[in-house]
Length: 118
Image (cartoon, rainbow, N blue to C red; front, side, top):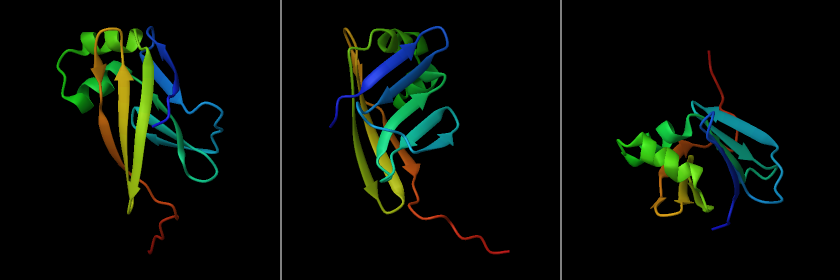
């Protein structure tokens, strides 16, 4: 579980986290979430727009203000990634001054382009 470099912009409520020393070769936009992948298709970064609302939704928290405070005081971010079949499961550890959250995301992930038939 690598420690991530991170930056939270409180004014715009955006959270960006990435594996130190990694280079993004491709990005996938999924609503308020951007996933960054390297050339080998490893997940190397994530960006959450409307981060406090997004994290509140995926942790079933009704207290968006408390989530925003956690994000503003982040001390550490880590992630675990498991790819099985065409699903990428990402567990994110957000460690703040006095609390932490561990949201889990499951997103579709295809290593080969889909073939469309007309």
